[in-house]
Image (cartoon, rainbow, N blue to C red; front, side, top):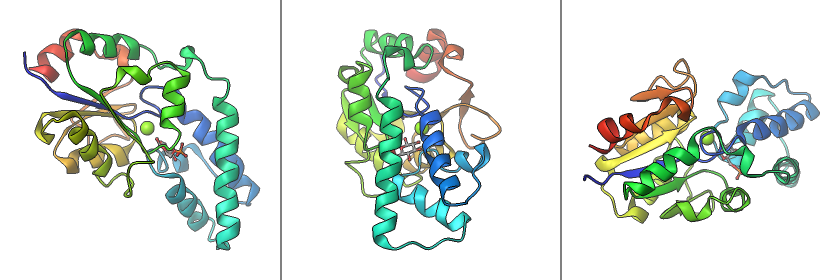
Length: 218
Ligand code: BG6
Ligand code: MG
């Protein structure tokens, strides 16, 4: 059987944490008198913490001292962590365990490729940390998505050539990163947003084992 490198984003793909990033950013933005909609949030998905704050400040035409900027980053992360402190196995998105265990049974290499500096903590909390052969997260990269660095490092960690890698992503920045890396991109979410993905599924319940075997592995 062919071997492919299956690379998964974390937030909004493996676990239902994108909603907590949204709540924490909205609270911060509103606190600065900057409006913040679901559409604004879409532009922050997959984007690093620092870059996200820079974007929010630019939208509100605000300049802050370095000290204030750093304290807001800290505040946002504390707020986010207070949401995820309650996380359990139940926050894993539907059918993710089925897909991961099917790929494992097929002997397919799997990696995590996330912008989050909290990725390992979250994977531990939902007891999925041992499912991945390689983990690359926000602590391992210097360039944020849509730069392909995170996925290139994940492929390297798996020892797989880029053209044999398949990336699952819920953000446009992540789909662009996968495409730039020369990998196949699979969007998880809305086809209207993830226009540059090769395939788009609402969630993993729509991805059958037959599809994985016949279209992705072979
Ligand atoms: C990405 C999220 O996975 O990680 C972004 O989609 C988030 O919303 C980014 O900003 C960085 O995450 P963290 O946990 O390091 O703040
Ligand atoms: Mg994501």
